[in-house]
Length: 482
Image (cartoon, rainbow, N blue to C red; front, side):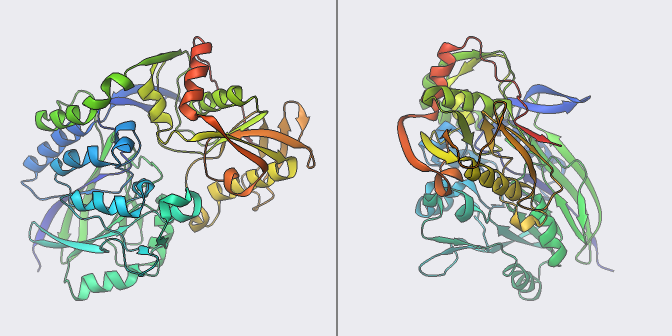
């Protein structure tokens, strides 16, 4: 009989370049509560404890959305994170928002990391060669472990064109089975771990179609899975976002099969004593931006958060600012998932950048009522498509100035029951002055007389905060499932 071997797998996903402690939202008794969590120095301290406890029998992987999401990360195109990430002892990662810097820059960042960037599904458009290796093999605790990466496949579909310029993205469904075969027959691995940034629904469908993966570390959709999900013989976990959680799987492996497991979703609590060396690296990374980002730019009476599907107070603030800046009747932004909460009190410039780190220009466009309904139907389908492969990431498009009443269970193109601008039903032929703060969706497909204005999103937010003391941005029932 083959000997039984123990292995601990640790997952980090969607940390979005949150260097240090920040507010995080938790559901408790039917309401949201907030407390500080996260930070790479605390993650390092927890990893040191786990490695000591498990005597080095630990695999530590990152599912991506790591090098992008805060101002210092964007200003350095991810470089500020490299020394910190290299100090954590990661074994492999894959990617999504990392492509915001363009393929060439991202490839340079990846080369600076002390562990492999893996992606079976990203290709150079000209050469058809993979941008990154599809897999790597680690030997831990006497086990040969095959690590396979699948990057987000929506970069070329929903994100600004510069992110995917010169690159091709696939789902990875075609590439995965032959990679599994290579790992089993040629590399003679005992265990296959998939590091994915497709999203939990997409991973579940993929794993229903492709057998042979033992563990799937899922990312992208910010699920806090407190219990692992079994899809066939594959264990699937996902561990929140913003570096506020680590996912831990303790495995017992015998004869190349997982015969027992235990799981823990570990909150990176504020009470964790930070690792001093990593804390120093974090201080060094943030020091050039400290004075600017700590500038107080306003005050909020509303808790600003983004972790709700249909509408969020954080985006209501953003859109209130944009609508006031432009005088537009309607305002839209993308349904981004990233952005740590801001509790009532002072609002800093850092808070503003955390909400919208790309700081895109504010734009205006004229939309007809017909285009408006078509755009909203398209967004509802991209968000709630019955086929997970048709889901395009993010929450429902953020909107202000209208109310949408919809039936989620209806077929594509027939979900919306009513759209109201003020108290009036939207008229198909009427034009509506609309503002937006994203190059996605409306900017690409709908509307006329598009104008990029001189102000950017954070300019509009600062101006709004300066006039409204304190800020109020409560939920308005913009999208209502009926």
